[in-house]
Image (cartoon, rainbow, N blue to C red; front, side, top):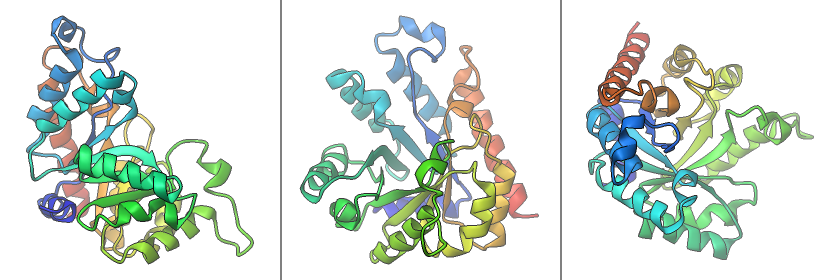
Length: 270
């Protein structure tokens, strides 16, 4: 299946949660520390309990790269637990001059076999073009992020009166000739989401910032419902995977994703 087919399949089932596997050995349940590979066991249990309800899994490469070869092995073993029909996003935030981006694209898509990747487009089209040549993969480009520092550059007003993030969205739409582009739009920017959602066209949208960062699930879902758009993924990491630190953490994660799915359904069907 292509990345687009995987994501549309899950969205069609009413699933919009991307489970963020930003797994940190310092935060996982203490009883797992006796395991041979504590983080792998943690990831396995989280996936086992959420795989029937998740639209995708997002793995932030920094949480794995920090441990070198061992961490990258952990990354690949984790991916093996994820069902074939569920989208896997490599949260790598790549973007560099063309030749370097070609190598990054081969790493993310050919070696690690991710279905999708996050990119920053601030070096221009040639820095993301190698990723877009993979027509059966998805590239989510940073538009307006959920961190406080997004105001430093992304919200800067240009001479034409528009903000930088708005120009990014327009450019990504122009690059979306293979229907393989998306944007990252922070859920903490609810007003900007409401004001700009009509400009998203057919772009897939990845929304971090719900839960620990304070974004409103209801506000996000209402905005997409009112715009009659359903190509959105709401990333939830800490608020889901660390919901409970007891030996029953897997069940707690399952209950949390079910609760999130139910809330989305209720808001959408009001």
